[in-house]
Amino acid sequence: MKTDSAKAPTVKVGKVLLIGRPNVGKSTFVNNLIGQKVAITSPKPQTTRFAIKALYEEERGKIIFVDTPGIFGKAEDRLSKRINTRTLTIIREEVDLVIYMIDHTRKRDFEEARVLGLVRKIDKPKILVVNKVDSQEKTYLPQYKFLEDEFKYVFEISALNKTHFKPLLDKVFELLPEKSSEEIPKDLVYPLINLDSKTFISELIREKVFLMMGEEIPYRSTAIVDDIAERDNGITYIKARILTTDDRYKKMLIGADGRKIKEIGSYARKEIALAINKKVFLDLKVETDPHWQETYY
Ligand SMILES: Nc1nc2c(ncn2[C@@H]2O[C@H](COP(=O)(O)OP(=O)(O)OP(=O)(O)O)[C@@H](O)[C@H]2O)c(=O)[nH]1
Ligand SMILES: [Mg+2]
Image 1: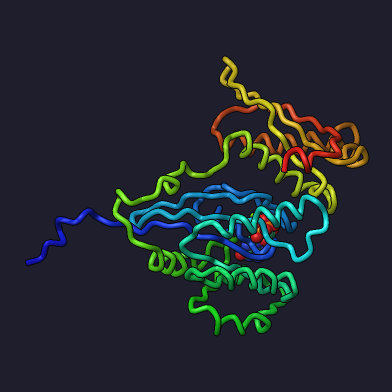
Image 2: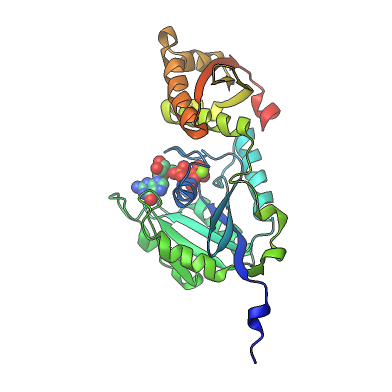
């Protein structure tokens, strides 16, 4: 006689590490899979500076996606070094599955080889994801073909257009361990993301700096939220600063007649208001702080 029916129901539960070079689309994938912006994205490499853990939940189970900063081959400045070190620590954390993401529109290089070297050392089931299949740019896919011998599971997706997510997600669920509800580890029942609201808002501001400022400035700047206060009139008042290493960057961030900072502030304010579903007043200033990389990262 069957006795299975007496067993507690099980679901698939686990942590999935996303790893890849900067700019391959890791954060775009997590956001579009979860259906909400949890990690900021930009066309510039090195957008993500710390691991973001985000919960994906559906009837099959729960997955924590760990979106990591892209690993750089050469970490020249202090911030890059610190980001790399932190990412290396994160990838040593216990995970159940690894998604190694590549961008076929970029040549393989020693940076990619370094990431592959790290992936090889992780003794967990692995999935190779080729991203940006929608892209019309020149493809370097032949340079990555050899990976198909190494990775048992290969999926081609467009993180941007959300295509081919289903077969990938089916495979992720298939490979994750099955657990009864009592066995679900505590850290797998986060709220949606592991960031507090100050950090989340500062990330949204930082994203606008990445999107609206030229080459060097995003890497020499960060955003800090000092205060979030609900006023009686229903408006959420946010006091924040953009810190940058040098007076000349400060000047560029402020712009002629303060136009640039106004533009950054207005773009950020709209998105924050949308994210927290409240009216927002954003008091945003720019300050020079040559040491922010030591103080805040
Ligand atoms: N065409 C195309 N572009 C994409 C796709 N996925 C991401 N991108 C773009 O690639 C750029 C980098 O995306 P991110 O998600 O910030 O990349 P990341 O891997 O998180 O980068 P880091 O945080 O710097 O490591 C952005 O401009 C995205 O819009 C895709 O499927 N197709
Ligand atoms: Mg990212």
